[in-house]
Image 1 (cartoon, rainbow, N blue to C red):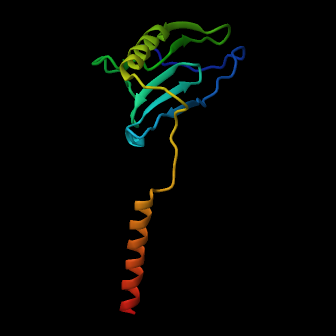
Image 2 (cartoon, helix red, strand yellow):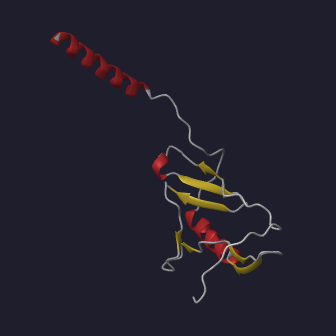
Image 3 (tube, rainbow, N blue to C red):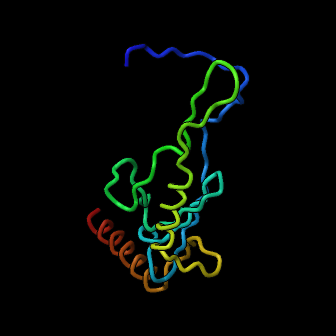
Length: 143
């Protein structure tokens, strides 16, 4: 690099948000707990990523595995006027890695999905009540 970069403003370009959202649905069942449950994440632009547990299924920039994914969707060169010129487009590579991942995960999406919280079973409530009662009884005897 022989020149220092300079930054300027192009008033003809639209604003770009720095906020990006995704929706994640976790598929819980009696066969798997929340920490290991499969999930489906829908990204803002519509891509769907499936995974398991709390980890994201991709690595960025390692080129060492089939889960390596490019860090950027597109890279553009922008001047002080006119449209941005796309110089790198990684959409096909990203879509390919996501498709391979989603085939490997193989989530049984039947019914609604999502996790539910219920009341503890009768035996669990009985044990908890007994322990609380015993703790209170021992505390009263000491006083």
